[in-house]
Length: 456
Image (cartoon, rainbow, N blue to C red; front, side, top):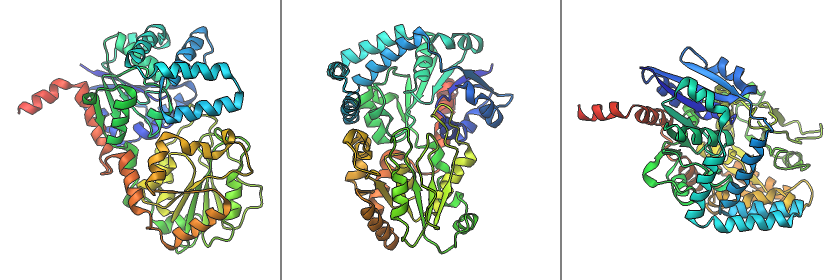
């Protein structure tokens, strides 16, 4: 009899992280299995065209509802956010106070954070949230498909939380996954503890035990599935890539990944960085953000600058990064000699390729800490990067120019730090993370088959 697996895809990066990896292929090839993908209505057609088949169904969910239920869910979301006790949350709390001057909200968040230190309070919150946040919009799907397993690919997304809670009430096995390196310390308290949690590395595993109350024996370390294709031998040869953009094969290439206005309002630091690099002996490929917009220039950029636009979607719900688009990003990284970025996942992307990293730590003009780019580097997940000599945080355009020239002269000076960061956050980099994850999902979907195989 066919087994049915629900897979969540509410965050736009899941198409890249899971669906376009070997994990999805291994799962589909695991026997008589039907897969149902849940995605926002705005991306249903795109996902159907790319991943749909007789074996794979895609269901659309309207996640823009403003019902009373949503207000109740937002209340629990606020509680979950403040029950998380990390340095990142302390920074975010202080920034919010500086921006809105809401003392009542600030002291309420501190009070909730105080209770967050107690396991009993965290467990009571989870019990209450599971009772009051029903996820009724998913009831009909559970009744129709009768799933055997829910794979919640982003355990901090509201829709994933609701589906996990509903699956638990129906006695359905739940496997959750931490989507990105910063999620455990920067999002919320883990609102629902799944039967098993997939993480990318042993370091993230320790965070899940410390901050998310996950039982150690219920955590599976897979590596990062989409990094299986982040390998030089799987990328476009550098000469072909450079020719594609009109660059010479012997030219040095700087990849400048720009900050998004979703995080930095009215702060065109990218333009300032471009001008600082005008006299650097290298070509500059400016990669605009996938989500949000960037104030990237004033139309008078140096001749050595080329812009790369991946789409710039308005939010993470509507974003869709295809396999080909992700291959293009890998090609950009592979061809680069230096990567300039900011407090984003591009840090890890560059570290996987062992590329020198420079972090933008200055604003386009002086501004308060709560509005400055520098506040993001105080987040907890950036501390190992900054302490480990894996990247250079530059505080001025002049410092940016200095470190670019230094790295062009000696690209290997921070190699050990880069390897340490890649290992800390990515775990296995053996090209088999997707296969490893796919086999784990099949094992939990068909536990009897594993037992039988072990006897033979």
